[in-house]
Length: 385
Image 1 (cartoon, rainbow, N blue to C red):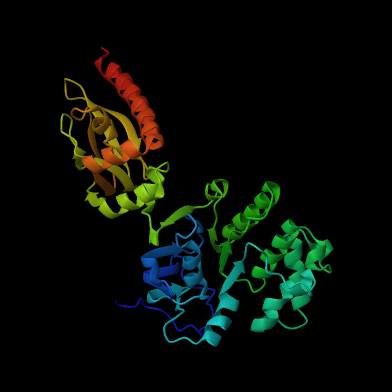
Image 2 (cartoon, rainbow, N blue to C red):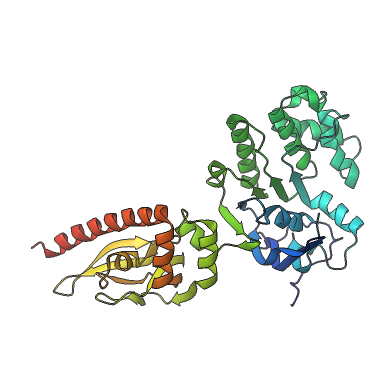
């Protein structure tokens, strides 16, 4: 495998780097573990790109590989194969543990579920600790910066208290202040609200949203659906493999194993602007999900006059009406003004999985009904004198 182009890990972070450069790139990352029971693979050739300034959630069932994936990004664990590039640096190839540790201190902020604050240090001293470790900021500046960060998270009045003397929510806020001590471009959080009440969890997410607004990148592992709805992207991992994001966005009710199955069999197609995807009266053999671009659904009257029924966006789908109801297409479907990328699932696989997922089938049938009503209204308008 050809390694991505990167800068040496011991280069300092350049504040003027291109905003369009990826913050995280995983290429063919494999992680295997061996024990008395034999060898098993936790990550199975993961490819992932996360851009600067994104707020990303990673979800998956217990044992799916999400924590191992996070450990690849933070440099805590080593991939068996593949490349991990974070903030422009390959963090494993030709890098010592000491170099990686120093790099981590300057480039990453890590927030753990159980806070990991040192119990014998005050909140202020805990926040100062990363600055001391990487020798960042003048010695006399560090207390003032730590206090500034505690003020940011609303803990300035508790600066001189030990962790045991504040609430769990306040401990997590202190842990976030510590994670931001060296002003890292990337914040990684592993179940940061797992031990908190809903109010404290909301405070944490509001802080994260503020960091993203300042240009930080945040990657968060969580089980909480109310949190994934507030991130820019939701990445699902199942059995060590990433689920295609178009599939998870289009069919969110599907079980993860079905999403992964669709990820493996979906066909990718690209259509040029205004190119016909489905013609009226055509037999439909595929279920289509839009990855990028817009799709126009158009009705045509007896005089060949066209009327736009709907314009579908990325994350929406089409073809389901004919597949579920039988018969031929009742409208023309074509690409919009820009090229359109779609994923196509064969009829037999789509119908089989719907039979195994009643919740998804019910959600799609409701969409079919609303679209039929929209078609009926458009048809009536087209026949009016």
